[in-house]
Image 1 (cartoon, rainbow, N blue to C red):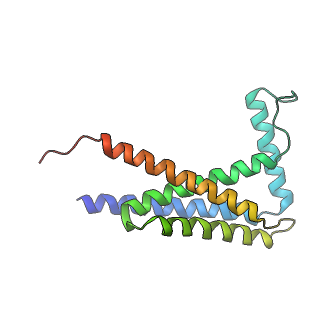
Image 2: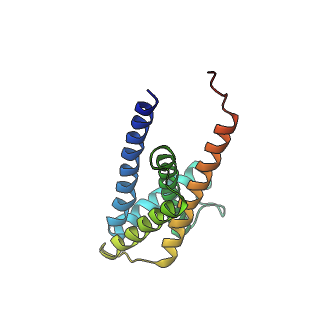
Image 3: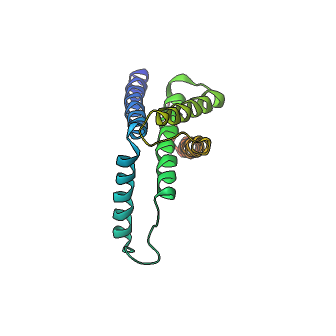
Length: 154
C-alpha cells in the first residue's frame, strides 16, 4: 500500500513540475512588450495592495520585481524536484543542481528567440539561486517533519 501512495505522490509531483516548467518557459516565450506589460500591471497591483501607490515607498521599476519573480518560480521548481527525488529517485545533490542549472540555461536560451528579449548570465545565476533556496528550504522542512513525526507502532 505504501508504494501505491508514493507512486500517486510522484505522479502528482511530475504533473506539478510539468506545469511549473510550462509556466517558466511560457513566460520566456513572450515578447518583451507583453512581458513588460504584465510586469507593470503586477507592480501596480503590488503598490495598490501595499497602499503605496504614488508614494515614495512604492515599488519603482520592474527590474527587481522581474528578478524576484524568476527566483520565486525557480524556488517552486526546486521544492518540487526535491520532493520528487526524495520520494522516487533517491538521487544526490549533483543531479538536482544539474537539473536546476539545465532548466535555467534552457530558459535563457528560449529568450534568445523571443522578440525584444535576450539571454543574460546573471539571470542564470538568479534562477539557480532561487532553485537552490527552494531545494534547501524543502529539504529542511522535510528533515524537521521526519524528526518530529511520531514513530509508527509495530
